[in-house]
Image (cartoon, rainbow, N blue to C red):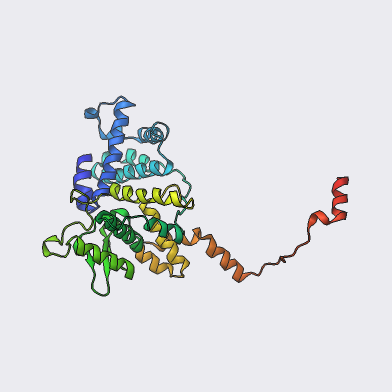
Length: 328
């Protein structure tokens, strides 16, 4: 049942991405490890009836206590198991009650993560670190500029092929995101110039290279998400030596948050930001509006004039108040 689910149902019927399949695979690999190492169940002897509510509850607790997974990770693993049980209750109606009990296991309440983003000055400082006298530095600057300018997820960036870039007016990049949804993102002039020079330098305009990755590593293979993280962290570390305003942890997703926050602060409508980021629901994009305290402060100042005056009297000079405090 599990083999059919991972190899046929998810990629075939559901048409999910390979990353999603790997996420499900890792969940069930951990579940089998738990069955074997903790419950002392032989994997070759496992049956569907063994995957019951007590086993799954114990597995989720084991993730938290033994593997020190956070609440979000535990919920993500439980969501994968829920998905399998929805599939199994149709394929194996005999075990319907057991699957329904697993599906009734609730997600844990998790604190909503803060939206970390960079200030314009911090972003400029990071982008100023690549050595433009080297080909690798010019590639890195183009990569990071494109990552910020398009608000792309890191996987969307590494999946880019030469054919996904259109440099003729109006210049756009075609990104393929979650659920294999594609969207066209316009390029700003500076990023367009960087990308054109990069593609000229690395000869990425030839017909034979249309299906080649847009960004490659030193071995001329497709750049990985780990590679992008390494490149970004290298320049973040250098920037932090210059200024203490650079946050301790900067990931490629922080650049995506940064683009969204900068657009919001510039007065761009949330609908356009949603389309740029590839969000399905506007409620997902609204997290940036809730996170921007500066916009909230300006809105409150505009709507409600402050009742306080700037030159309030100094309380320590109020003799009657001091006398009353002495008697208290």
